[in-house]
Image (cartoon, rainbow, N blue to C red):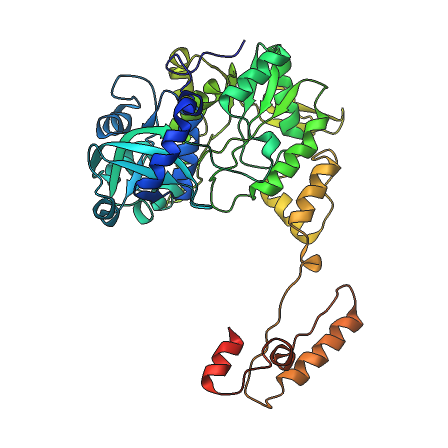
Length: 457
């Protein structure tokens, strides 16, 4: 049986507003538009599909202030992360944004109308206070703090939304479940207990062993629920990660696990974010949630210290566990024992027994150089997916661009280099000369300043 949604009911606004879809679509065409940012798009999707229940819109000042100060909405409901719609002063003037106004919210990728916002208030946040209380300190080494100060606009607009449609995706459509759909899937399979696993990284054998162990100890099934919205800058792109997840799913016992994608814009807010993730997974119907070591941590601060302690997230989720209504499963660090060819939790390995592991840094080095990645660490299918996206330097393409004055010798050098590289072998080499471009693509142009400018465009 799926878990009760946070706040008591699932706020699936798509279902709620389906009966007035035609009217909302017609009205949206007559209203002023706000083109959403990528983060706002992720937030709106989870408001519309119920992933952020009990929210039914972007936070008003009362809710925002309460969440920043106390991790609770104004009515007392636990909710640790502010979900806000930021706008500029120019937006306010252009759209006459104020209490009572109605604005169409549009997808930045295709301009589709997704929802209509009924404005309740407009307010100016204290960004330094938000950074300090939500993220622990106002430190630009934190990616969300940098985002807050450099990309978030001056004002926040609070209000409820009416749903027109969810964003349209053309990738991994069969893996994009709404909370309503995932709950129905669990019911169809008669899954009564479900352990959710949050990840923004590729998965390897240790992750499979960890999740299988967690499920078996609780007589539960597993939901692999990776984030495919905004994650930490520098993370592996979601296309590669999803191919990895698809490769590892057949390695689970038949019928144990299910893969679904979460369109969340992470804030990397450590302990607060772990509570937020638990609420989201509760709304998606799971009963258990794995909280890792330094869960949703951004790394080091400006002084070289970790932003959060390794177990701060687990402590905070435990503090609110009864109110959350979802059981936390502490992440157990797994290590490989070559003597028995199996993975075991680090704290269960007898002293003196040999263990093996490969760090993230070492893995990236092996991918970069083409060095072998042992099967005890990762499955061949997973390694293949990673190598396709991150080939070693010797298999990567590159461009050499020669520029110089007329008759300076650049064409001669380029031809000589092409012959040398072909002689060396190992790569296909193409040569594109300026004369070729001009004769085949810009034959109508002369050598005037204006024509030369057009030619290089």
